Every structure is written in structure tokens, then in C-alpha cells.
Amino acid sequence: MIRIRLEPLGKTLAVEPGTPLRDVLFPYGVEFPCGGRARCRRCKVRVLDGELAATPEQERLLAPSEIAAGWRLACHSTAAADVTLEIAQWQTAILADDSAFPFTPRPGLGIAVDLGTTTLVAQLLDLSTGRVLGVRTALNPQAAYGSDVMSRVEFAVAGGLERLCGLIRTEIGAMASALAGETTIADVALVGNTVMHHLFCSIDLEPLAHCPFEPECDGLQVFPAADLGWSLAGNPAVRFLPCLGGFVGSDILAGILATRMAESEELLGLVDLGTNGEIVIGNRERILCASTAAGPAFEGGRISMGMRAAAGAIAEVEAVEGNLVCRVLGHTVPRGICGSGLVDAVAAGLDLGLIQPGGRLASGNGGNGGLPLAPPVQLTQRDIRELQLAKAATAAGLAIVLERFGARPEDLRTLYLAGAFGNYLNRASARRIGLLEVPLEKVEPAGNTALLGAKLALFYASDYVDLRARIRHIPLGSDPEFQDRYVAAMPFPPTSP
Image (cartoon, rainbow, N blue to C red; front, side):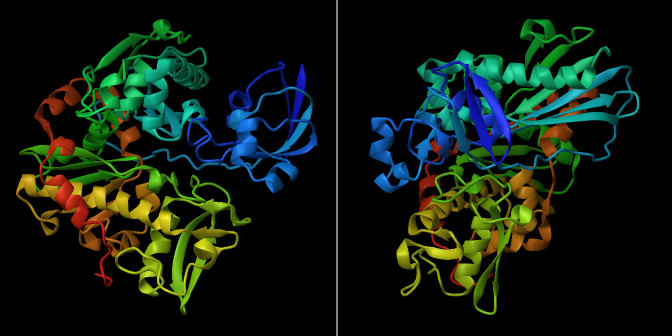
């Protein structure tokens, strides 16, 4: 066996010779955003003691000075001898839910699961009282094969479907077992985006790998727990709720349940900002939904120093007396910038004249290749372009869905922002960059609506089936107006709205 010492964690791993480091380092904070394809170089670790040879591929991707300083790419390294590695311990906050909700009591215990691309959260409920008895959270182990859904689609289509399926079933099964113990479970409800739905249910993702990106099997999936390899007393049915079309998954169906949109006389909106920006507009009369490929910028992906919202991430930026002032999560040395910090930084840069409405760094700014934020973190011109692409896709999608409904932004009673990014996004910054052209007083963070909706599904088994039939999906990829709206939404507003 080979021993790998991880610092500053003080952990020692015993592994077989030849074990890929990607298989063992992800649970300890080493990220593999590009799925181990050596495109992003963000899985760097540093050799403090012992031996870890630099492969020819690493010598091509890393500077000689980096190799000499001990830096290696974990995605292209295997354990060959005892070694001590320096890694970054990034702890990601996972959004749970403790909202009160109306329900019709039923006997027994149930488990609700929000299967996110990055994070997992499961809650154990007393179905007679609605009380949460336990919570378990974890990182999605599939992230070792790519931080965004399209990286995982690519890996699955290339033959990795069963690998990704096995990883997520094992992880959620362990979470469920830890919650339940020896207690009988009556029901388990899962929600997630369309790719997570397919990866958990072992459904071919090939239709999602190319236009028109329409799934062929996105309905309700039901499994006896034992068939998943789970040892839960009572062998409950495990239900993965149905998707709504394209990349609009059951997490959005759950969000519609959670916001009670289908019961509202007034017009409501729900937006989940991520790699795919999901948009829903509706009321008790009708509901329209769509998804738009925003790219991973809101989650720190494709940003030169981007990272998850974890210790060391710049999460907030504001303009103070002509300067950019940053708040770093964990009150530690800055390591990078997460999505909320990116939106803030560009909004503040626009207000200070450091960034032009067209997106270019103003003359005299951006020396050394970027706009300094908090050393060593800076924004590059390419980072700003990535944010423009993401915000333009979302703004164009929201405009089209509102137009198809025959409504204007001011007609909304409330626009809910779902998920962790929406919960921490500065609404004024989002409006300043043109991401959400909705009056600020109408925009509200909604917390983890996916998890709340999954809990509701434990009580109302038929409601979400009936609700799904009432929702119409708008495929923006084939909409003739989307590209024009997308291009028009690319510039930033010249002045603060």
C-alpha cells in the first residue's frame, strides 16, 4: 500500500499502487471542473515531500517553474510512492430547508432528497407532523468527472453512464441509511435537473448531447429501494419526480409546488440560475417554462480564478470611495471568486468606470492581464465575456417566456430566485448588469425550493403528476427570436437602473 498524506488536513490515505488521484482526492476538496480532461488546471496539488512524477502531459500544461515548485495536476497523476500533498480544503455551504408548509398528515416516515449537480441534501420527515427529524448533506461524487452537467453528459455518452449512476446511487443510499437507521421508511422522493434524473435512473443521455436537447424518457421513475442496493427497512418505493422538458428538471417542478404558483391568481416567476438557467412564469390559469444554456460562469466555471462558494472565495464586492472592496468567505486568504462575487465585481466595475458597457476593460485598467480585486484574485477580459454570455442567455430567455405569456416584467407579483446562487445573489448587482430586468422590490430569494417541493411530494403523490400536465415547455434552442434577443442582451446597461 502507498500512503498519501494530505496537508493542511492532517489526513493520511492508504491506496493501492497505480490508483488515480482523482478517485481519492475529490472528497477532500480537490476539484475537477473539466472532468479530468486537463482543460482547466484547477486540480493542482503541490508535492511537499516524497515523489509524484510529472507526466509529459503535465510538462506540456504547467510551466517549468511550476513543476520545479512541486505543482502537479491531480487529474493526470497516479499514486506510485509515498507522498505528502498540499491541497486546498474548500468547504461548500449546502442549502437545506426548514420552511413550514401545509400538508395532509399520513402515517410513517419519509425521506426527501435534492440531488444537485454539486451538492446533495436529504431530510428525514415524520409524515404525521411534517417535522424534520434529521438532515444529511454531501458533495455530489460525480463532480470528479466534471463540475457542469454537459461534462457529465459527455462522460456518460462515452461509456461512463454506469459509473456515474453507481456513484450517485451509492452516495444517496448511504445518506438515506444514515438518516433511517433501523426505522421503517414509507416513501422516498427525489428531485434534480434532467441530467441528474437520467444519471440516477440509468437512462441514456445521448439525446441530451446534441440539438434539440430533448430527452426521450423524462417521466416519473419508481424503484424499490432494494433494487438500488439500499438497505432500508420496509423496502420503500423510491420515486424520482418527472422532468418538464429539455433541461427543465423535476427540481423546477418541485419549485413550482413550493411557491404554490399553480394556486396563485397573480402572476409569479421562478428562476434557477446555474449552468442551465431554468425559467418559469405562471399562475393558476397556465404555466410556461424554459431553460437556457447560461454556461457555468454563475458557478465559477470557465472563470480564470473561479471556484465554488467556499472558504477563500470572494463572495461580495462593492464600490467604496472609488475602490473595489471584497468580502472573502471564511475570513481567509483569497483563493478565487464565486458566482455572486463575479456579478458584484462587474456591477461595481461598471459603476466605477473600470468596465465599459460593451464589456471591455476601460483604458488604463486591467494591467497585467486583468482587473485586480483582492490579491492574488483578478478578473480577466475573458471572465467578463463569460459573464456577459451567461447573463444575456438568462435575460433573453426570461424576456421570451414573459412575452409568450403576454406579460411584462412589472406584471409579476414576485420573481423568486431558487437555489444557493439565487439565495446569495445581490439583486441590485443582478439588475445593474442586466441579468434581471425586473423591479427590485419584486425579486425575492426563495431558498431551496427543490427540497421543499420534494417534501411536499411525500404528502401529495398525485398533485405533481396533474401539475406536470398543465405546464408547457418552450424550447428556446429552436425559437427563432432567441438568438436576436440573446445578442441584444449582451451589453451591460450604460447606467444603473
